[in-house]
Amino acid sequence: MGVELTKDSVDLGIVVKDKEASLRFYRDTLGFEFVAESDMGNGMLMQRLMCGTSMIKLVTFAQTPELSNPSGGINGATGYRYWTISVANLEAIVAEAKAAGYQVPWEPREIRAGVSVAMIEDPDGNWVELLQRAEGAV
Image (tube, rainbow, N blue to C red; front, side, top):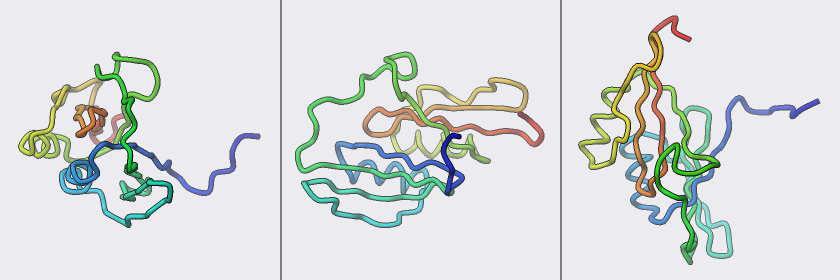
């Protein structure tokens, strides 16, 4: 049977070390729309931002968790290693991220005819893939 979707996108929760640094990246650099900040109780605070119809939930705790994702990008470990945003202005976003001091482990590159990608790193070292398709490319 499978799930019966009520939304055409997913929401993503990212536990971050520094909410202000993460807001500067996701809101100010990538341009996600800030929706609200919510106290979730038990020392958990959530900032909700919209990326299209996907909600990005930046979560901090009064006591920052000791463990963090291993570094190394896509091949640094198993599990969730990156997520993808389809964009129309790949080069401009990468330039803005670099100007703001963020790491760009993959400069824009064509991976197949009419499809280009780049990877940028958020303040916690999580990779965000930006993907741009030329009209008609699959």
